[in-house]
Figure: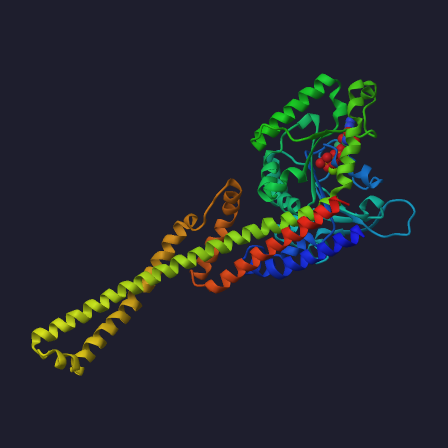
Length: 459
Ligand SMILES: Nc1nc2c(ncn2[C@@H]2O[C@H](COP(=O)(O)OP(=O)(O)OP(=O)(O)O)[C@@H](O)[C@H]2O)c(=O)[nH]1
Ligand SMILES: [Mg+2]
C-alpha cells in the first residue's frame, strides 16, 4: 500500500515537472534534456572515492557476487551502473550488459544528458544487469577511483562535471576514503557542493573511512580519523564534523588485524552503512521534493530577473515617451510664438481659437515632433538601457541569503545569454506566466510531498 502510494505520488510529480517546469526550462535554455528524465528512473546510490579505497569490494559485498574487478592499483577507469535484471538463474550473476552509447541513447535511462561529454565518456560507461535481490529497489553506480587533479585532466572528459551530474540524480552519495589517502578529494567535494541542493547535502552525502583494519592500532586509527576530519573541515569550511562510518571488509581483512581489539568497537559500522544504503529508496520522496525546489528555485530566479528587466525597460520607455510630451509642447509653443510674431494670429481670442489653419499647423508640428522624438529617442534609450542592464544585471535580483547568492551565481550567465540572444526583445507576459507556473509547481510539490512524508513517517 505504502509502495503504491509513493509510486503514485512519484508519477504525479514527474507529470508536474514535465508539464510545468520542463517547458520553462527549455524556453530559457536552462537544461538541454527534459528535467523529469533525472527523476523518472529507480532510486540511485552513487559510490565515489579515492582509487583503491574499496568501492568495488563494498559493491560486490552488497550485490552478493564478484561483479566488479578489484585490485590494489587504480583498477577501474569506468563508471558502471548496476541494476536489476530478471533471470531464471539460481545463482546471482550478470544477466545483461550494455555500453555507454546504448545507455545515453535510451530514453528509459536517466543518463542522456551525459552524451555531451563525448565518446571518451561513453566508452567508459556501462550498465550491468544482475539478478541480485539487493538491486530490486535501487541501482548503484561504481565510479573510477579519484586520482590527483593533474591525472584527472588526462581522462579526456570533465570528470568533476560528470560526478556532479550523477550526484544530482542520486538519492545517496557514498564518499569513500582509506587510511592511505584520507582527504585528497577537494575538487570532488566542491563539485558536489555546487550541484547538490544545499539543504539536502548533509542528508544525501555519507562519509566512509574504509580499510580501517589496515591502521594497525587504535592510535593509528585516531591519527587517520583526525587527518580526515581536519581535511573535511578545511573543505567544508565548517567546524562540526559529519558522521563518518569506519568500516572494513571482513573478506579482505589482513591476518594481523584479526587480533586487534580496536576493530571490535567498529564492526557494526559496516552493517550500519549497508542499512543506510538499503534505506536509499526511502529518501526518494525527499529527493524529489528538493529536486523540484532546487530546479524550480533556479527557474523562479531566472524568470524573476527577466521580469525585473522587462519592467525596467518598460519604465525607461515610459519615461522617454513622457519627455516627448515636453518636446511636443515646446514645439507647439514655438509655433504659436512664431505665428504670433508673424502677426498671423488674430488678436481677438475668439478668432484666435477659431483659426483652423494655425491650429492645424501647430497640431501637426507638435504631433510630428512627438513622433520624431518617439522614433529617435525611445529605441536609443532602450538600447542604452539594455547595454547598462547587461553590465549591472546583479541589481535586477534581490539576494537575501547565501543560498540565493549561490543560485544566482549559477543562473546569472543564463539570464545574460538569454538577454543577449533575444537582444532584450521577448514577451513580458510570457515570462510572467512562466514565473507563475514555476511558483505554482514548487508550492504544490512541497505541500503534497510534505503531507505524504509526514503521513509515511507516522505509519
Ligand atoms: N585490508 C583491506 N583491504 C581492502 C578492503 N577493502 C578493499 N580492500 C582491498 O583493496 C584493494 C582495492 O579495492 P577495490 O575495491 O578495487 O577499490 P576501488 O575503490 O574499487 O578501486 P578503483 O576501482 O581502482 O578506484 C583490493 O585489493 C581489495 O581487496 C578492506 O576493508 N581492508
Ligand atoms: Mg573499483
